Length: 120
Length: 246
Image (cartoon, rainbow over all chains, first blue to last red; front, side, top):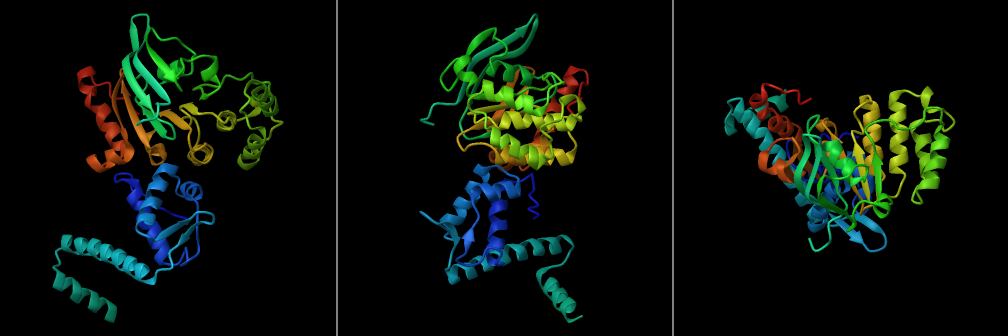
């Protein structure tokens, strides 16, 4: 399992984003059990405080729910999942557009290029 | 902040003859953190760790661990990994486990055996027949299988290959209680920076920086490794180009 964390940026937002992706992609299915801080920290090779902070954010946003007895589970809220999917798509597109701009393509040219490439 | 710091040093100074190894440092360490003690060779890392462990006495200043001066009580709280191998090499791993079980009531033997199995260490092997990397693994098993409050690890990854390094870092992050603090001294910053909460930069016996890792990344936009190299390169020219940071 690759986490690909970039040491030059704070670690917890990167972990949060990775876990969001794992949730919308169904690696951790809707309503299913979510791993413990300890297990995730070991998997990502980060310390537990860092992982706790990322999970705390996911809890605040309601993507992950802590039950008093049954540990953590993934939300069952479809709207929230759809919204999260959109947020993640938005940041992917933003990154991509920045790269295209650096290559000298404006928005319209980029969109045209995408269409051309898909039609091929 | 209301909680008492696990470790507190006030104007702590250690001199060896005319050489000042630690120059009046003030330091507080909280519980539940993994802290990197980072500095080039000869900066005072080992001196600080030995003081905290009660192996050497300060020239002046004070230090408290869980509110107590280093002594019998604090030895029960502190688990120390020295920077060298101090075992008689005719001993087997089992012998060492017996000694640790006698000396430390918090030594978890079952866990130690389990870790030996996981790391492929044979408990009946003698220390002298082992490779350097295996010896380091054994030492770390001994240290991490104590249920201590403060772990002081002096260069735990210096002598092992990258694969074993991964093992060891895993051992560190998976084997401590939530309220324990682990201090790791090293100059191999990039290998450990992901597991750290906090870093302390030490230079010529002074603490030049103590901050949360994520704060540094946010403020500086760079890795701890980069910052470390910059911080310690910066002084090099004034000292006649002694830039052997790594």
